[in-house]
Length: 99
Image (cartoon, rainbow, N blue to C red):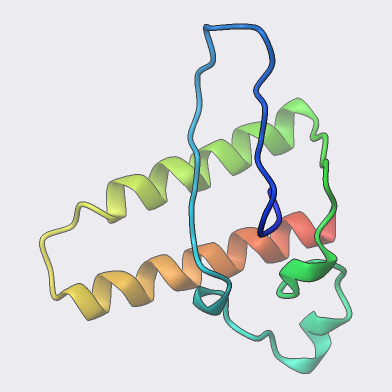
């Protein structure tokens, strides 16, 4: 996660493989009260600078991001597709907050 005004350096390696998700902070839902107690779930200002994850969690998160990428290409009303992606993002942030 990169905060506003920061940049990310992937290091000297050239064979990176993965996704970059760019979004504006207002795209993130304000979580309901019980979820607010989970650090970082909906409060991007509280997100950690680094979040190492184990292989199981990495597979889960990778699957969620891959599904979001696939769903972003759905041929449907744009507002409905955006709503789907918004909820998927919120679920992903909540899952990461539980870690």
